[in-house]
Image 1 (spheres, one colour):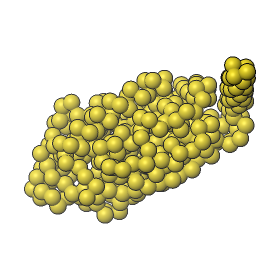
Image 2: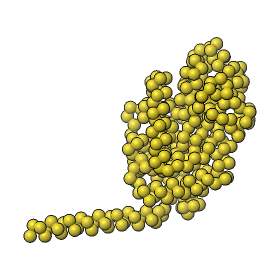
Image 3: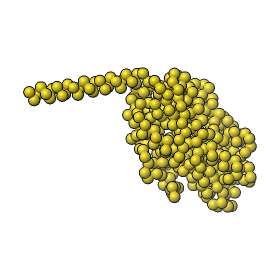
Length: 328
């Protein structure tokens, strides 16, 4: 009798498991049946916002479902990342943002509300972005060598803006400071847009600013472009030299942007999103719009995306340790 009861229990459990798997597969096959939310970790006007406004409508068209962009700024985009990590893993909540910044946060924030390598499903790398070193027109420096000489004459008095603590713009300037042997005062803001506006208004003198925020203000002559952080010059600013060309060989400080989903999002949904977004990133108009803002469309497998994030976390940890960056 005991044996038969055990068999019944095992059979019932097997039926339930098969039913659950079939239901999940059916749900994934029907995806999406309602609007998809893309969470951003910074205010409107930044690079992640620019990317989302390009990719969102294209993804909506391909999936035949609304894609809603939601800005949830704070704590160097960690608030938005945490909201995504805690969302239901059904493919309807995604995070698009500066993975370079999230990778650096692992070494800066002692108590994050999520784990970058345990709490997410990696979808795809979206873009690599170059920053532009800019200066307010009142500063008597029209090139990087001139800036270095000026800062050396007034150590600790020149201020630089970043989009957030441990952001790509922050780490880029710390790297330059160490290579050039100069001392500047760091003033972090809550996003690339606010940082660019602060430099244009003269609140701070210099900073590495994302191309998406920098180009309009450069064209309006609100500040001067001194150098770009990529290894080669940009199509949008062909007359602006690289930092490497300006006397610091080997300098490179670019930022990676990607899309994450909550952990345990069905692999079929992750695969569908990866395929659709990679198709979007290969579109000529998308690549052209990215290039005008100093961004290079990427696209990757989830595995490649995770590996590049692990490498970024290791590099950020090194810079943060050497520069003794803290939240204090």
